[in-house]
Image (cartoon, rainbow, N blue to C red; front, side):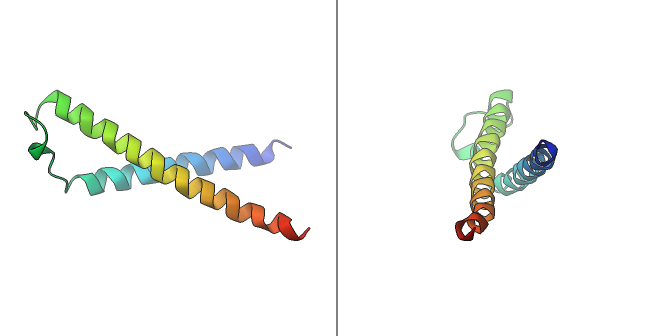
Length: 78
């Protein structure tokens, strides 16, 4: 019964870290200096981290929901 939970947890961790890295990489090209007073200051860095986490969470949640829904489709014909 619980053997699938470990695999699902591992998939969630890998997907979350993957999209966190992709989001961080993509946000490096965004010009935060146009929106913050001190782009190299600690507040700007914390803002960048929070924006990265928020976007990565949304994207990974979408991906995991889509994956879960796709896997549930097989139960339509049983």
